[in-house]
Structures are given as C-alpha cells and as structure tokens.
Image (tube, rainbow, N blue to C red; front, top):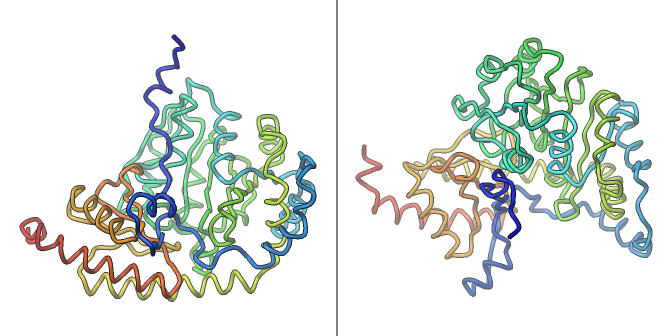
Length: 374
C-alpha cells in the first residue's frame, strides 16, 4: 500500500468559491450571481481579449522561460530592473516557490490567523510549521508577529489589504515593522488588492521599497480580470529572484496569460472603470448592511467581511443564499468561522445579492433572536 507523509494525510486542500456551473447543476437554478472569489465583475480587460484572439494560433509553441517581454514590461512600468522580477501562475505558485527556496522543514513561518488561505495550504503541503498570530481588530498584529520571531523563523507572510478581512496597515506601521525584522528573515508582502487601496495616502505601496529581505507579490487575477489565466509576479532583490528561478516551473505563466497581461497593463481606462464600479457598489452594500444591522469590517479592497453572531448563523446564511442563487464565501477555512465574505459586483449583481441577503438575514434573525438580543 502506498503511504503518504503524515503532513499530506492531514492536509486540508484548498477549497475555492463554488463554481457557478456547479450550483446550477446542484440546485437547478437559472440565475446565479457569484460574489465569492473577489473577481472583477466587469470581466477581463477588452485589450487583453483582443490580444488573446490575435495570439491563439501560436499555442503550439513553448513559452520563453525567462518571460522576457512581460518581465521587461513590468520592470519598465514599476521602475525596477528586469532581474528584480519573476512571473508565475498567480500568487499561489509564487508563494510555493518562495517557501521551497527559502525554508526547510525544520524552519518556522509566521503569519496571521485569518489571512489568505492559499498561504496555509502551501505551507502545510510543504511540511512547514506556520506560527499563527491572532488578528487584532480584524487586522494584522504586526507587533505580535515581530515579538514571535525566533532563531527558527525564516519567512513572514503579510497581505495588505488583508484577505478576507479587507483591513490595511499603514506606511508608518509597515516601515516600523520592517525595522524590527532581522535581515535573515524574508518578508512576503502580498498586494493582491493594491489597485483598490493605493489611492489611500497612508497605503505602503510595496514596489516603492528596495529592501534586501522584502519580496512583493502582485496578481492580475483581481482588478485586471485575468483570474482564469492565472498570472502574477513578484519583485525583490536580484539575489532573491535568482534563487526563485531555480525552483520555478520553466514554462509558466502560459503564453496567452503573458500576452494578455501586457495588454491589460496598458488598459488604464478599464482599471479606472473597475475602481469606480467597486467604490460605487461597495457604498450601496455598506448602506444596506447598516440598515439591516449586519456587522461589517471597513474595507480597503473589493470585498466586505460580514461578521455574524456565531458559526452556525454564518453557515446558514451562506447555505440559504446558495439555495437562492447567490454564491458568497463562508471563510471558516481562513480561520474566521463566524464570517462571510462578499465582493463587489455590477450594479445588477449588487441589487440581486442584497435582495437575497436581506430576505435571508431577516428570516434567520428571527430564528436566532435570542442570540442577537444578547
């Protein structure tokens, strides 16, 4: 009998937001709205779509392992040297490569309890010990993380804004934190939602820093609307990037993803419209949550974290919404079992979602009245 290592036997695989097609099959529902995975409700950049059409005939060719065109486009865009950039199939693959390249099974990694589930899955499947520091007011406790560094600590993972809470730490908080971190501890700064947060004057844009033990992650899965193509990049010192190329799969990201990314970077009008749509629909959501009395965490991203009285209440809200064609994300696997995440949608999707959420919440509020009145 084939045996797997203990850490694989105990591994809980990544569970994504329920696909629309799956819910249609399960429930026989005709109209389904998915606001579970923080995707761009406007779809991909139109410029990216045109480029994809233009390059489909080249799919028989392997990609350039150095991703020369895309790497140089990113370097030029963010005033970096090309040897400070590496591309991968989204942030997930880059996180995996970083853990492989800069830690071993005897080392410790530190992050928060209640952050990106992809971090937990990658650390666990590679047999690394993750030290989890509790959130503070649903945000990173940077002081708590710094205080828990030991001689075994090799990597710290931070997401700013944090997923799934939407909270943000400031430039001053980040700079003070980095001053406390030993130079032999690598800090990952995951900025998947930076497009939505960067207008805030206190936001610490990671690509503005050149710190020896800092690596910054970006993805085109969110604001740029390329989640289905899986593409992202990391920026760090040339020494860090050199080591990552040793463990990176040679032909990723795929060819169409690279070409689409270059086009999407140049579509400023699309990004502007994306941010405007996000801001408008989140304001509508916020007003409805306040009207209903649903607790929410102020956000700097493209989603809200909704906090319910207990795990059972949150689970029932999620299930009742699914029954009515609304896919949300119960974030128990992120370490927040009493919470649900809902991302911004189009105007039509937003009103559809809020109508369902209102009906479901008011129905369950009566059922859980004794809990709510405490």
